[in-house]
Image (cartoon, rainbow, N blue to C red):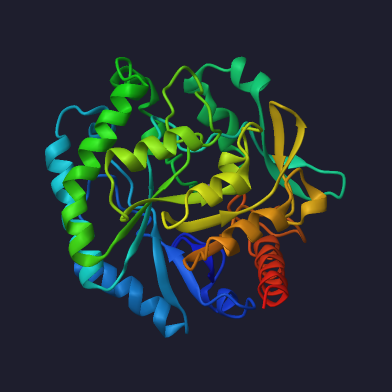
Length: 355
Ligand SMILES: [Mn+2]
């Protein structure tokens, strides 16, 4: 495995490449062209400029998170063929720049959903949190308003203000899209892009829906073992794989995370590792990465990845906000750096223990 850290680009991120370079064991970044709209083509020049900037800092690009999917593709409407054509062109340009991993998601309207971005924990740190009660009491159009004041002046992925201004229209677009239709639209998209992925060896790694169940009556499909296997079978190509995100699949306590990892051998191209602390089945908060701070056995999760011979990038996922850092919620430097060190420690111990 390679330890990496997500980086939003110098225009958007409070964390610098220099800081990432000095974080022990982190050799690569997972990055994106953050100001690109879904459906836009990424040019070779833009990709190369990003790549040069990362390489000048002594790091390299381990993968892209994300190249976002236009809603016309997810709903199967309007200009989907044009947007798929553009997506293929972007993949081609990434391939020519020697980038071989793309994380994306197929979530309708909202990307990940949290009801609080700065829940205070006993130690004074703040974390992202979710409670079903708050979602049930909220009309979806108010979702953005209710959390935007906690974004620390940053733009959070999937929650861009321009996008949120059209939430009502987005809901209308999805009104006749159920789970089966969403699966069909995903299959249509994957079938069209697989040839270019094969040509340039680009691994597509779908990110799970977060939380891993339907919110506001919208369909959600990348939620459990059965559905991921359905997704991989419907387009059976090793380039059609997954991002294993413990914090997202883990939102549903019915998901056995180590068993899921073992069942996905060869098809996990990217891993997000983090812990959650459950206060009840439908109230959870993001904890420190350490097992003892949350509800997951992080040793078992990392061990399962090690056991299947996982060799792709891992990144620590959302961290707590600690030591008075002001950053994008979940994406400060300090707690993610602690997370990276902890995961590397687990990996080294497992690795040496088995030799
Ligand atoms: Mn994730």
